[in-house]
View 1 (tube, helix red, strand yellow):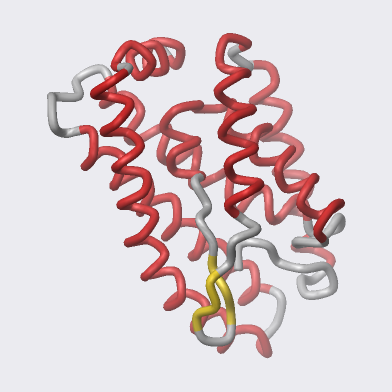
View 2 (cartoon, one colour; view 1 turned 120 degrees about the vertical axis):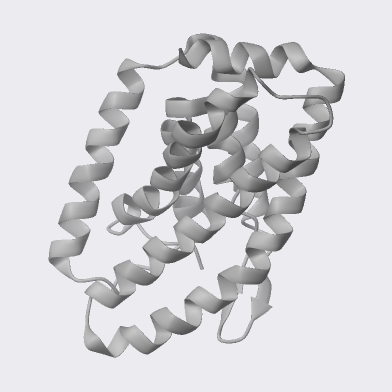
Length: 206
């Protein structure tokens, strides 16, 4: 459950999430790399579609997040790409909500930026055959960090939500394994057939 619905979180958390997300969007738009817009649009559309395929796990359901991949390939541009996809999902399918949009954006965008900060610089020094492991690290980190933020959001909203937050953390573990494989495979494929794309990605962040 990366999409927290409206009516769950407390008002202070909603306001804080909205303000922080607005700040991230402002910074990301100032650093927007227009050469990456086609790639950002493709990944945003992929995230939009991936959210439609949910797998029930216990009391919740999970779907591919792809925020680790987006952070690795897009850097700051991942923030508006995720925001646009979340807005469309809320409008067309009722995933999440409008009031909680800031928190949902923050829960996905912060892990994407963390992947960009820690792993994106390694793209330039990526040795042959190591693309899978770098991608796997980004995929796993993105999911686990998102799971921790979603659980934290629920836990901060009231004592009644804390047991659900703990259960939710467990549901993210199998998703992290799947996402690591998917993201690792994608990065390994790009490193094999289009290494210049990854090198340009890293160079544009520097």
